[in-house]
Amino acid sequence: MSPGFQLWPAAASQHAREVDLLIGSFGAMVWLLSLPVFLLMGFFAWRYRRGRAANRRHRPNRNIWLETSWSAIPFTLTMVFYVWATGLFLDLQHPPANAMTIDVVAKQWMWKFQHPEGAREINDLHVPVGTPVKLVMTSQDVIHSLYLPAMRIKQDVLPGRYTSEWFTADRTGVFPLRCAEFCGADHAVMGGRLVVMSPARFAEWLAANDGGALSPAERGAKLYRESGCAACHDRAANGLAPSLEGLFGTRVQLADGSVRTADEQYLRDSLILPNSAVTAGYRPIMPSYANTFGPDEIAALVAWMKTSGGSRPQ
Image 1: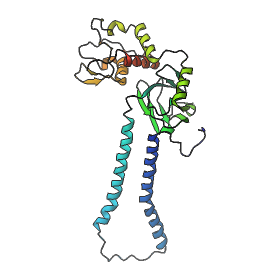
Image 2: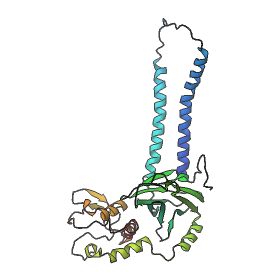
Image 3: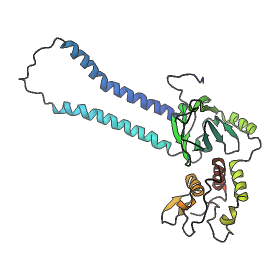
Image 4: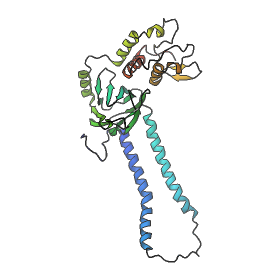
């Protein structure tokens, strides 16, 4: 796929084709409703260009059904498109449970990607075709926005917060990757490539590019041990803090009486703002690690907590 100007980017997923169909259908509706108006405006401007005295003695035609249809039909069509677009939007909020999770860190002016197997890359993102991919993203500096034109998805990437987007590519190829939020002097060059490969070729690429690096979960386990987290969170730690074994995916009762699911966002919040969601039965004594761990290290700790200890009883 050439990086030059394209009037309409290629579609490389089912979602992208549905978005194209939505846009095309909505455009056709706008033309269908607007074109007769402009044609009649032109006709009447030409037909009565010389002007004539208006006869205002005739009774007005009060065809209620005709007048109602002028409003009801466009409104109904617009609501159809509203429901259609809402369905596409809501679908993007629910990635499949088996999606491959890739951590993304944005930085002026580059994209850093961390694969669950340990491979890292900058500005290039390699993924297998036919596999759901979930991108969990944060920024080290300012607001960025990860835009994949071929997938028709875009999501802001914020400092101090984690956002996500997902896609399933259904054709191989090389597609552009862009930053869609002005982020500084070199915003225009903050881009890269989305490389969609067959599963066999992706496995070969992954094996050739891990470089013997630890996986994020392995790095997280090492950080957990070296940072002294076990002193409070191991089961034998005198109850100073809840155990992290099997925590991911469970329902957590908080000190304020609310209940939250221990998903990826909850785990990240617990590291950055630990006392904003204190587990019931424990004191708010955990320090914030926002200035201790960088985005890569927090992602590694979350990856380890997601895989440690199997499932806890609900």
